[in-house]
Length: 227
Image: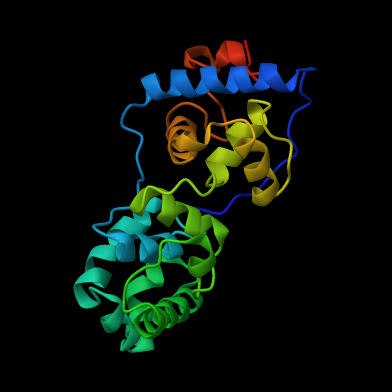
């Protein structure tokens, strides 16, 4: 889940807040039909694995993370094992994900914090999650929405940021600003699904270069669509 490099949003036509919310609802409905398989792309079996995988996904593709985590989880299946891990060994296991020294330190610190303060379990609140090593709001949103079914916020990665700009739904230049704009438009019960849908659509139809507007189900709803 690589980090977002944000560009300024295209100039949007004048649109009332009500009209924008209605357009957002139609976008959600169309994308739900177009991508019924849209789910979290990070392979995981429990909240602990998802939390670790999400930390590793910073500035790295989900595919690469999924190649690394089987060996990592086999060696460190829970927080207690990770807390007692040799840092150098963790570094070697996560090296392919980039920034491996920083990530390894965060993971060992995470294991220790979970073991010491939470009985080895991953907490299910935003306040507790963001206090853990290596965990920011985006990571917490991923874990809460996908592991616990808690709609605490909208995950904003590169795809979500890019498509939100192109669709004229957000103008912010930071993930936090974009999240606030989307949270005001997307029904809360669909916050987690919304991110999955935009990620899948971004990969399959609307990449950063050469978006396939001619086959996009959102072309008539998108102010950035090309003929």
